[in-house]
Image 1: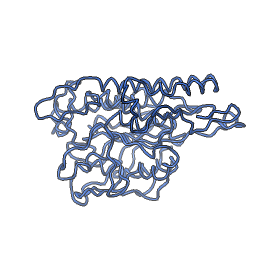
Image 2 (image 1 turned 135 degrees about the vertical axis):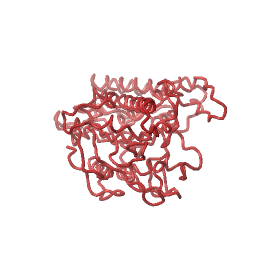
Image 3 (image 1 turned 90 degrees about the vertical axis):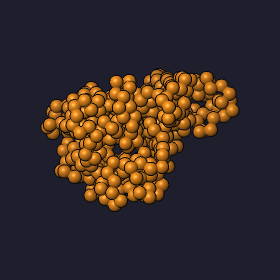
Image 4 (image 1 turned 45 degrees about the vertical axis):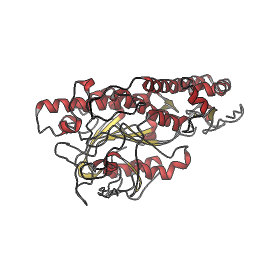
Length: 437
């Protein structure tokens, strides 16, 4: 770190310690001298794609009317306090049922590519990686891929399991599997990825202890508001680190005979697990370590159960409910639970001050699934939410209905335009989506 009192602080300024590199959030001190309060450079726009498996109960998801005055459906009630920060987009469809057949397992691979995955594990380039290729040189990490489950097995519904567990593809033959370990993600963001012997010898030592002197020196040279912002940020880092350490220290739960033992570094319950990864995404965006993220809540055909909700049946099995009331009730519990965790992520983004607004204002966060009705393996009228203001280029708070079978990839083209990585075409796209601003 090199801080000069008569020069603006570089956006790339970091705090360095033993095996640690901690980027800083956007500060007033990073504004070039001579800029008026309203003329400072705008914070960058970030984009994230959050995926949930097995479709959604669309009758309980879709608003009855369009526009800003729509009544929030029951399923979306976990987002009630955030309704002004996201839009519901209806009528979008994913390309499915094409070459090599298959209706469920390929849904995730199609989601960001608009290309039907093949049984030889060929797919297409995903929207997040189009952005990473154009913007990656501006940040330490071109993109961040996270997910709540490792790729497992060799065949999923006749397809390689990487197809049903991977959203990001850098080329038709190169998938980017998501990282399930919060510790590994943390080390990518704030360390070398290879902890030093000193860190290994004392796992109780906080990463912040290694940069304490530099943090203190910086605090003495910036404004009071910046000092508060740094303190808030470092407190968030310490909180996330502490939750990771607690998860690592807990005993591994006893599992039924034949069940796969979870990674010991991963929280055993879904909510703390997904919130931990979500908080890491917030820190990555806050510090501009990356501007592109894909975040998988679970793989397609997920058999995760939710005993903490009283739901012991597997998610995938419940998605094939055949209209049975008790099964529909249980899967709605799961879907509300997922949306509650998404609300946590949005609230965290909204609490981070950045420029004249919040971090959420400078993000585009898409949430959805590659299936509409999971019972029918329906790939039309997908459940899609778009949160954030995209740096002022989006007008959230509405239900927008598009013509039936409008390609989902048209939304991705619109997001790529707004993040500064325009593309002429993506998969089955026909042109950027309208009516977003």
